[in-house]
Length: 218
Ligand code: HPA
Ligand code: MG
Image 1 (cartoon, rainbow, N blue to C red):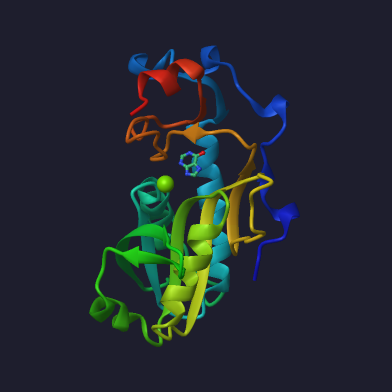
Image 2: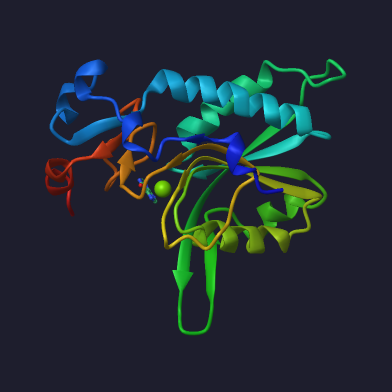
């Protein structure tokens, strides 16, 4: 079920941006980000709450699927948090872990995704409860295609959590089951989100600066 927007944290307004003076930034990125949108500590606090919601609604063992590469940090922190929690019956949730790289494609005949794991490996999803862990929903196109592909393998259920959802006019309206924050229509980096593979080694979620876009352009 799509998460109700009142349940996630809206950081789309200017007042939420922190100055670079307020927190530590790696010196090699000082000029490359313009503001801190979500400090690392706030991300971690939010991840704990999302883990609570996931455990409360889990009806059995979960296959937690990390969408690489951007999802890896959220995945690692979320799995750590989920492991420590018990449901209403005082039971922990058994987890197995899967790692998938997803590439979207669009040709003149169809739109779809290719996965870095084989169809044989995907057959293991049959009858399982999947939890997809993504860093950001931007247009929503990749997630809609990914869900269509995964449904072919008849899992018992599929839920999606994304740490971020971007408020963009290009959105196809897709909303995950568990959302951390809604963010403005700007390019953000850090906490494993990259720009041309840079900035994954930055803990806070930051808005990239024009200097940064130029410095790491391909
Ligand atoms: N940052 C990093 N990766 C992304 C973004 C973004 O803002 N949108 C889609 N992929
Ligand atoms: Mg990405």
